[in-house]
Structure formats: C-alpha cells, structure tokens
Image (cartoon, rainbow over all chains, first blue to last red; front, side):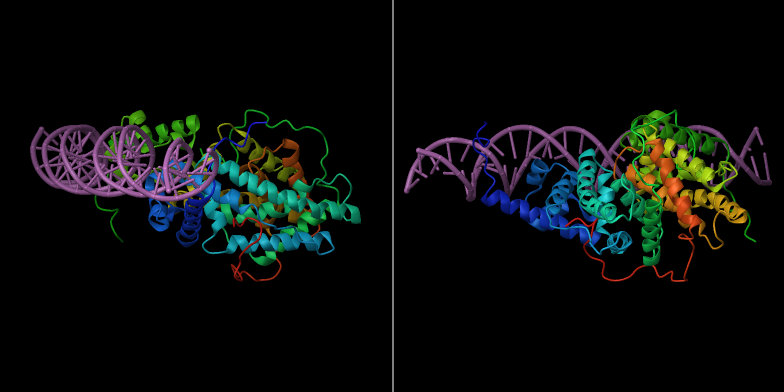
Length: 218
Length: 218
DNA sequence: ATCTTAATGCTACTTTTGTAGCGTTAAGAA
DNA sequence: TTCTTAACGCTACAAAAGTAGCATTAAGAT
C-alpha cells in the first residue's frame, strides 16, 4: 500500500511550467512543423529555462510523448449514423480532414514517432485508443446484421482507413474526399462478404527469410 | 546542344569513393537502423573523410536519396499468376516479407524520409515506380474481365497494400501472413464489385478547414 | 511564521555536428 | 609524358546540442 510517493510536488509551479511548455510546444508544432520544435525554441517561447527542459523531458520526442498523452484525454467518440457504410464514410471523412490540414499536425507527430521508441509507443497508444473506440461501429454493424459475426473490428477499420494514411503520409499523394469515401465503401463491401473475419488462430508474427520485393531498397 | 558538361570526372576515384560510401551506408543501415547511420560513422567505416561526405552529400537523408535512387535501378516486375486475386496476394506476400524483416530497411528508409524533403521525394519516386509496374496486374485483370473497365490501378493497389503498411509502420502492430492475404482478397472483391473505379474527375486536392478528428493530437 | 527540500534558474563546461581554407592527389586532355 | 583542375584529405574553427554543479525559489508540512 505504498503511500502516495511520500513527498511529490505536482501542484503550483511545476504545473505552471508544464502547461507553459506544452502550450509553447503545441504552438511551435502547428506553426512550423517538427523542424521548428527544438528544446531551445520551446525554452525561448515558454520562458522556461533550457536546463529545466533537458531535465524534465530530455528530448523533443519525449516532449511529444507528454503532448500526445495529454491530448488523448478527450471525449472523442466514433460516429453513429445508423449504418456501417455511413459510419465508415464518416470516419474516413474525419481522417481525410485531419490529413489534408496544412501544416499537418498528424504528419509532424508521425515524423516525431520515428525519432525515438518512446514517441513511437506514445503514438501507438494514441491510435490504439482511437481504434478501440471505433470498434463500436463494427459491433453495432454486426448486431444489425450488416456484417457477419466474427468480423474483426480492427481488420475492417484498418482496411477502411489504412489506404488513406498510406497514400497521404507514405506515398505523399493528395487524396480526394471522394477517394476517401470510396475506400470506406470498399472495406464495407468486403466486410459484408465476410472477407474481414478473424479466421484462424495463426498469430505467428513473422515468417521466412524475407528479402527483396517492393518496399525493399536495394 | 550543350557539350557534355565540359569536364566532368565521374570515373576512377570519385566512383570508388561513392561505392565505398554507399556500401558502408547500406551496411550500417542494415545493422543498426537509421540511428546507426551518421555521417561520422559512415566516414569511419568507409575510410572516406568526414569533409568529403559533408561536401558531396551534406546530410544523412541526402545520402539515403543516393542510396534509394541507386536501388531503384533493378529489374523487379509484378507477379503474374493468371488471376487478379493470385497477383494481389503475391504482391502482399512480398510486402509482408519486406515489412517483417528485422531490422526493417523499409522502416528505416521511411524514417529517413521524414527528415528532409529530398529524402521524401526520393522515396515517393521509388514507390511511384513500384506502383507503376504493378499497374500491369490491374490491366491484365480488366482484360480478363475480373474487374470492370475504369478500375483505377492505383486505388486497387493502395486498397490492397495500404492496410499492410499502415498497420505495420504507423500503428506498429505485427501483421500475420494470413492477414496480409486477407487484405489482398478484400481489395480484389471490392474491385470486382466496381467499387474502385476512377469515377468523377474531381481531383481537387483538399477541402475545408479540417480540424479535429482521429489522428489529430489535441 | 518557519523549516525542509523538490523543482527551477543560472553559469560554465563537454560533446557532437557542421563549415572554411588550403595543400594534395589523380582523371582526362594534349 | 606533361599540364590542368575537379575531387579529395587535412587542420582548424564555429555553432549547436547536451550535461554538471551550485545557487535560488517556492510547495507543502509543522
């Protein structure tokens, strides 16, 4: 029953410092992307000293972790339009909107996630939470009989949203709103045909030697 | 008719230096990922001097650009199994193999692409080339009547491969071989239903204000 | 009010990263 | 061969990133 960490001191000044730092970081990120987000810049903007930043956060990715974890505490919930197709289209519209924003905070956060394992995990947690909430869409669809029992919520949601993220963030091509909706409808149809069920318990992570193929560089 | 750049000197020593540097970079990348790839490390390993690296390449991402452009000159071509589903499954198997390799060169290259615009464009060129070659799969399928005329090769290919990349690289979750094949079959079914045609000439890149929604951080 | 001490601010230092200037080497032409 | 000069190696330097040690401030307890 360890007492609450003896003598922590989370109130007052520390809280103000954290708030000032996170606000400055958020502003810098939205203004000039990840490149504008250096500890020195945050120190200047927030009025908090360099060394304090290095002590409490240590690096830019760690600061992003804090920012992400703080941002995950919102009350967002998945759309509920009454039909699977409607819900998926609505989700993809939101993703599309977030991806076409300029400058894209999403892209900046993804970029940051490739600079440290901690930031990676924070972003994964964030998305995990989002897909978890979206699973409700699939459960309702199964209850309504729009998708067969056994339909894997994650597979369906990834099938719908994955192409959007891929085309925009990794392939770097613009995505039209109509395309975004099309991917949603395509995933919906595939789910209705029972092609996105969680069949087989084969969860072995990898496979063979794995050399060559597209995506491989040399 | 500008003469061939007067007096270039691409032979001999310069070529040896470039080869040594690219080889060292490739080795470091495969061994310890992007973090192990610093200009100093490449200098040590290749025997080429620091300043030469800074002069000719300038930064790690630029070096990756060179590496990528050199690697794109291979003779890879899309599978041809006789059916659309077979081809898509084969493609996704290759992608899956590349993505589950450890350490993943693909992941490292993607990470590098977020560190400079030049590296970004190089990676986009590389993938553009790959999807271009894969378009043959869709053309053959349309000729065989497996997909309706007007089916957009890119949409179909992104629908098939996008979920793989998304789940593995952005969401950070393992992907089973069976899942990879499932996404290919789902895309195939959607295409057969005519859900991945290039309908409407609306190629406007973006839209409204675009705030909030999943993927947005705060 | 007074005391204790976690958290912050400050200065000085080290390490890493990137650049400038100049002498040296060797590719390509005569 | 000899000559020219693009490309390279080297040293020294400049700027940025990160750390150490100590003084100062203020949160929480008495």
